[in-house]
Image (cartoon, rainbow, N blue to C red; front, side, top):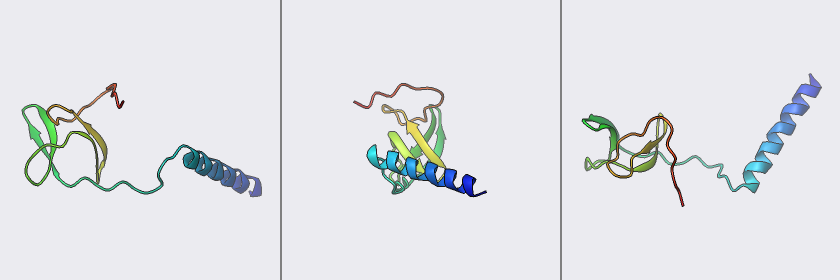
Length: 83
């Protein structure tokens, strides 16, 4: 039992060090405000002015990537060039 607790503590410590060294933030990202709407071009997440968001958003149900051109939800595998 003591060996198992020591192993878990070591894994936790190591993952904390790796996160700190890689610059990962421990703070939770703010949620994007808006609502989902299904349109003829797919699902979109709209702001209060009914304009679609684009790129990465964080909602109460998770992270999503929206097409940069029209704001439609991207599904499946997508190679996203961030540079």
